[in-house]
Structure formats: C-alpha cells, structure tokens
Image 1 (cartoon, rainbow, N blue to C red):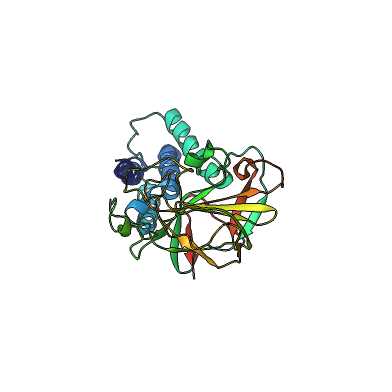
Image 2: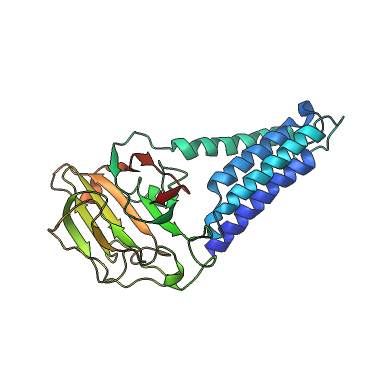
Length: 304
C-alpha cells in the first residue's frame, strides 16, 4: 500500500538524518563538515517533502526540533574532538547527494514551470478547521501527480486535518467517514454562474478509484474572465444547478470521493476564460491564491 510505503520512507529518512549527524558529524568542523551538510540538507528535505500527514503533521515539528537540538549538541560538544569517525561514503559522493537535496529544497519554493502563469485570488472554499494541501505547487516536484495532466498543472488537492494532525482516523481507512474532509461543506470561492454540475456518481471506497472527469461529481463556475473547477464531490450532494448565479461563500456541495480519487479530498483548479469556442480545461491554468496567499505541497491552511 502506497500510504504505508511513503510513511515508512519518511520515518526512515528522518531517522537517517539524526543517525548521520550522531555517527559521522563529529570531530573538527574542517574534517566533518560534509557530514554536517548532508544531515542538514536531508533534514530540511524530509521536513518539507515528508508524508507526515499519514500519521500526524505535528511529527514534522517534533522531528525538526529534535534534529536542531542534536545539531547544537554536536557543534558544541563534538566539534572540538581531534578526529571524528570517517563516513562510509566518500566526500565527493556526500557533496553530490547534499547538492541533490539542496536542489529539491529550492525547487519546493520555485517549482519548474517554464513560464510564469497569471494568478487568481479566491476565497477559501471552507469555513472552519485546518486544511492541508495534499498536492499543489508550481510544477515539479511539488505537483507531481497533476503535472502531466492537461490543464491541471497548477491544480490543488486539499484534505482536512483532525485534532491529531491526521487527515483520517487511522493511517489508512476504507471507511469514508473516517476521513475528516468527507461530508464537509464546500463554499463558492468566487462570484459567477454555474456552467456545469454533476451529482450522480457514487463515491469510491478507498483504495479503489474510477478515472474522471466523466464520472466525477463536480461544480464548474464561470467567473467571467476565469473558470473555477471543483471536483470529487459526494454523491447527491451538489446544491446548485447549471445556469444559477452564485456568490462568494454560498454553499455548493459536500466533499466526497467520486471520480479519479483514492481517498476523499477536494480538487480545485482555475483556468483563464478567453471566451473562445474551446473547452474550459484547454485554457491556460491560473495560479490559485486563497485570500492573497499561495499554498504549496504539504502547506497547512487555517480556515476561521
């Protein structure tokens, strides 16, 4: 199961960072600095990219605090040793791996999009609670699963966190109601006219899924110069109808797990409306900001 695999990789990487720091980042700085750099680069990488949400997002704060305490200890108490223990890999390999982690960290913030896309400022489609960007960002590597799908290069997948910082009541569950976002009311993030709805597709039982968008419960809003598409809504939960005028904050439906979805979440994307006779999803994508703020992979969104 991919959920367990990704969580195990995250925990192993976190442990490896501290192990490298403890075992090899000792001795004089001039001697052991490659180990320090490697451990720090790995720690930042796994802090940003680790799938902590499968257990609890709070774990990443515990990890980075533990790592920082260990780093200070090594610098204060171990850096004056005459000679540390030589790493099992060469300095050249360590520098190469360190550079890889640093590059991925930089790409977390910059992305790999070849051209800048226009932005759109939307209201949050939620009211109360803490939400989490499961997929999102400016291309690779943060928006991996949307990157090669037509029109979705800047799309976002959003889940909701429970009080323990998990998106479900267990690491993985086949029960839809265990997922915090399931049955959550979704609100219109903008003013506009409902261009399309679907409402009669059954919710998938994780981990089974059906490929969308033809069997995804959805709401498409025409905002004049843009479109906003919201998908994976719950079966029979769409409150609005095609041709209806909606306003920011108006309830649209409930979050579900229909279409191409492994577990309950909200898929949201925005496209330019050029008023040409082409499908909306073939228009240029827009970079979504919620209340003036851009959110990327594994960012938390607090809705009041």
